[in-house]
Image 1: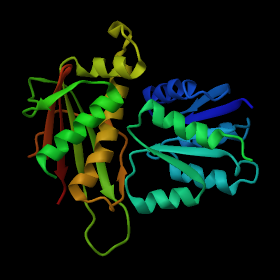
Image 2: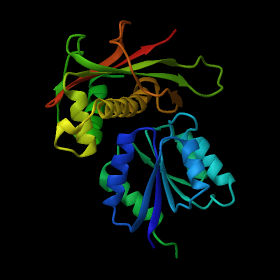
Image 3: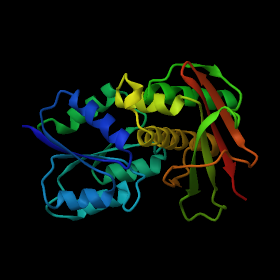
Image 4: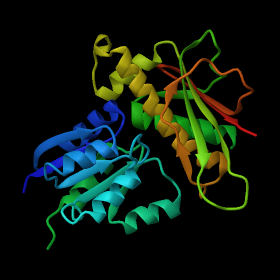
Amino acid sequence: MSYKILIVDDSRIMREMIQRTVSLSGIAIESFDQAADGAQALALMKTKPFDLVLLDINMPVMDGEQLLTAIRKDETLRSTLVIIASTESSDTRIRRLRLMGAEFIHKPFRPEDLASVVARVAAPKA
Amino acid sequence: MQYSEGVAAIGGIAEGLCYLTPVGPASLVTLSQAEMTIMISYEEMGTGSEPRKRGTAYLILSHGLPTTLGANMLGCSDQSRVTLELAIDASNELANVLTGNLLPLVYGKEREFQLSTPRMSPYPSSQMLDACSLTTEEGVLSWANVENG
């Protein structure tokens, strides 16, 4: 299976870094798209299906937690794989995000750490 | 936050995020040494009765460092390809990641903070608390916290 991937971060440089890292992860990639905030990402997701979304928490307009909530509430989007890349360190908040079905990776991350998380969540389920 | 703890954290992030080469602790980047200052406002989230922490964090970068950040984070060896916009973007992202990682060292891990979008700022004139500075082979960076109230 080749994955359609959406990267959501208000930093263009971070979006490019994440895209480069995911490209090195070993998973089959069909396409990459990028969005600069949660609202842009949600609008894009309603016009085009994505298999995996990598998103930041702190973003203007609509932050990552709001986007994740919207994704899980939408019947057509709720099964989308989500990885949150953030500096968040509060165990309470991380637990809350994981309960919403998101995987979490702490910034800064090494390319091999992100590659490992992507490969794990993108692996075909038995 | 212990000074050495802060410097170690800055070093880890500078190396892991921006591929800088840490050398050791430094003095605060002065106004004449600074090329760029980035500020981030923060406010504690939550509904507890204890007063919420709020303030402003600053990242101060010495001359040449913003362009180096941009080049390193883009994976680009030719620094002439790094536009001012990209240098600012890279500096903003470093400020964001540093602040997200250092505020728990200052205030404790269980506090949740809302961070503003990073933006360029004049060199801060307020007394800077919890300031940590790191020398790298590529330049000097300082992170400083000014708590409100």
